[in-house]
Amino acid sequence: MLTLSQSTLQLFDDLEKEVNFELHKEGFLFVFLQQKSLNAKFERLLRGAKAYGHDRPIELTKDEVLEREPALSANIIGGIYLKNQYHIRPESLTMGLVAYLKKAQCQTGFWDRNHKNRTTKGEDYGCLLGKRSISFRYIPISKWCTQQFTCETVRL
Image (tube, rainbow, N blue to C red):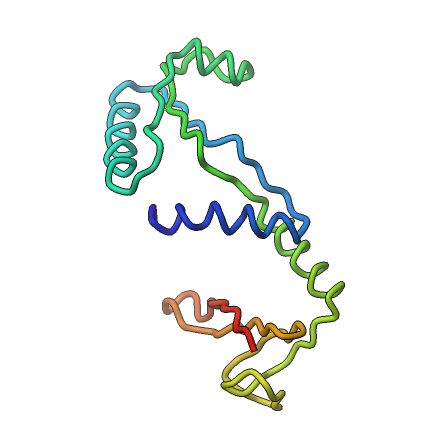
């Protein structure tokens, strides 16, 4: 997951240039009520940072956390801050992608394997945008969730 997040940040930066959606780049703040929990999380984040080349997590005192987030309870004991992390609002991303595709006059439908001809039923459901085709392939992921899509862009 951590290696995925390294490339994901750049992909969101690129996407933000063309698609309107809510993207927050302020990082993540973890807040703790127990020192034992803070220590365990910090060690786990530190190992991940070293293994995958991420920035080192920053341990914050109670006062430092409350300075950043004054509405938090005085019962906290401290926190951990990850500065190079993003948060998006998924519904705003979905709406932004729909608006982008509508504006681009996307032709949706089923396509053959080479993404050149529309068919009444095919393996790929996608969108043709000029010289680019975006295809969505449905795959089973568990017995409770029967479909999830993968997305790829194919240059024609």
